[in-house]
Image (cartoon, rainbow, N blue to C red):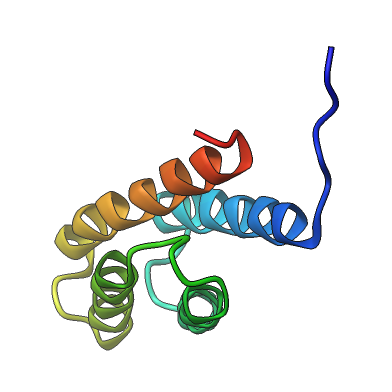
Length: 101
C-alpha cells in the first residue's frame, strides 16, 4: 500500500479545487455580481501560467470572460451557466491532477 505524495503543487491544486467549488456554489446561491470572482480568475491565470500544462488556458480565459460579463451585467443569469461549464472543467482537471489521472 503506497502513500499519497504531498507536494506544494498538490497543496496549491487542492486549494484551487476548493476555491472553484466555492465560486460555483456562490454563483448559484448568492448575488451574481461581485469582485471576488474576478480575483479568483486572476489567481487562475497565475496558476495556469505558473504550472503550465495543468489547465488549458482557453478554458480559463472562457471562464474569465464569463466572470467579467457577469460582473458588468451582461445577462448574468444566462452567462453563469456557461461559466459553470468552465468551472466544471477546472474542477474536473484539478481532481485529475490530484489523483494523477
